[in-house]
Amino acid sequence: MVNIDTVYQRVLAFANKEQRGYITPQEFNLFANQAQLEIFEQYFYDLNQAARVPGNDYVYADLDDMLEEKIQVFENEDTSAVISGYTGNTTGSAIKILPDYIYRVHRVELNNINCEILKTKDFKEANHGGPLTKPSSKRPIANIRRGRMRVVGSGDSFIVPTGIFYFRRPVTVSWGYVVINEKALYDPHIQKTTNFELHPSEETELVYKILKFAGVAMQRADIMRAGQGMEMSQVQQEKQ
Image (tube, rainbow, N blue to C red):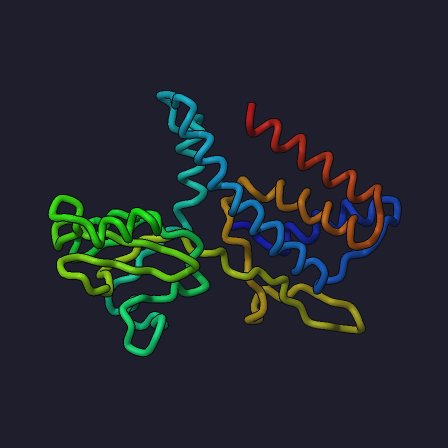
């Protein structure tokens, strides 16, 4: 977790240097959520790239292990009771619409058996194929298209899976505050305050990204270049 007030104060310190400008809490919250989402989405691209590079014997220095540590906080599972409550494609349909909080599904289960997640074309061919390719209770198949999930086991009918393993989206962050003498003061105890869910190591990159967004919004090229330059240096250092 990264404390949102720590990030805000660091961003203000950079932005206010030489009286460059002030970032309101409302602006900061918008930039903060955009920055968090960009970092989160980058994890999946980095994981794909890291899988192509041989690891090492030191867990603290292995890129793949570091990424797994950062992303595992967002991994979750919905059981059959929760899945049954998903909105159906039609009334009573076993074709379920995935909730907005699900970012990416990486495993679908039917009675503790892993469903093979197929592309739409392969899913249709398997479902209408012969005995060797047709799904069964021991070899169920699944397909996810346009946010809709279909699962087939034995028989030709769609059925509701018993488990879904997925990565959820980060919660919306918010720098909560109270206004005293026309000045916004941080209040960590009000309900509107929500910290970043990202790994503590992402604090610096959050600051740089938010600073870059603030420079664009304020039409201050100096702030934008400062944030962009520090962000690029940070990324280059991580990839060395």
